[in-house]
Image (cartoon, rainbow, N blue to C red; front, top):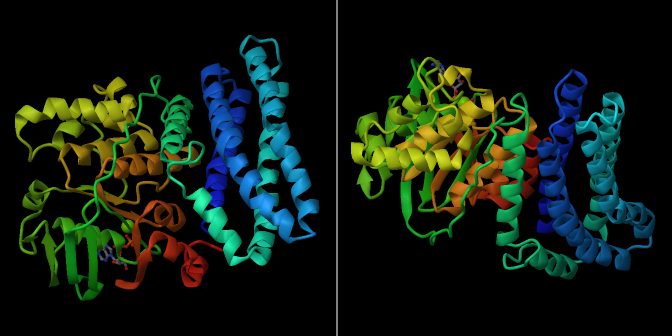
Length: 438
Ligand SMILES: Nc1ncnc2c1ncn2[C@@H]1O[C@H](COP(=O)(O)OP(=O)(O)O)[C@@H](O)[C@H]1O
Ligand SMILES: [Mg+2]
């Protein structure tokens, strides 16, 4: 049933997008200008992603087989597939509204109403699929059906939903996040592009933590944590607030004392190494709450991330970070404190990248961000992963983190209680009940 997970992930992206359109509608009613470039980027994404990939996936595989297996299917699927067919036309109509509104030929209240009508339709369509079509599929499809559907959904060479198409959709999404107003997105003028390279083989163990303990006074916050990260892997560490995720990352990077256990990194025992030396070895962290230096410029914040690095490589690395986050280049001389939350998160990740990480530690990068930016941050993680970066991702947003992770660990009150592949954990009943709100 991997296909259902993929569809649900698509749905949560689209839901975030619908929420974003609603927020922009509100801003426009409040007097903001109608930015045709932003809306066109949204519609391009929907056209490419939804009409070209998401709907065909459902229509040609899931829904087709569902109709064969259940007499109830038609009543549920007919209206959904009618929506699929009408989608492109509705989008054309909305594009026309944007063009008119941008030229002052359509009154703002009417334009906002048209936007809301569209997002309401999108949301109720998603809800109907989640509430009726997917449960029916879970109930009536056979194991053989799932094998067929899943293998189509997971075919990375497929021109419509394989890796190449995904990279294209990510690029389109990145454009939206960049063009969205600053209160909601990154608010940059240039979208730039995120490059994706082929990932290397995931074989050898880069990090091995054994029985790590750490205390605050007499309270043991970590009670013997053992965990492994292989080279090129993305590992998610998920758990509720207070579980010890931040303490784990801080102990790993050496800013919090370890009272028992050992840490081996890249073939070396670093258990007693100072934090700056661990950074030199390639353990670089984007901390919880970003912690950028507000009065310093963006440029200087990034340079700080490279303080353990040889001077001659810094300018080149800065340009690489700017290519990834063009908004930071546009604002490079401004104090970091003037950046929005999403921009500061990009800065925190960029600063960690300046240390040339062999392993990147991310502590709740999506925390407190607008929905569009939550997606954008996870897209950045996906891109880094595709480039072969080894990533330890700490998140309360368990579903999103596990969805992109190769493997995951569930942390509860300082102990690892579950481990498995990202997919295994997402489908685990305990995890679903405790963290995914399902
Ligand atoms: N500076 C501190 N002093 C005392 N206790 C702390 C401190 N930081 C965290 N703790 C405690 O350690 C536990 C783990 O916290 P933390 O690592 O921040 O969890 P998480 O990042 O998973 O939310 C919690 O019970 C928290 O109250
Ligand atoms: Mg934390």
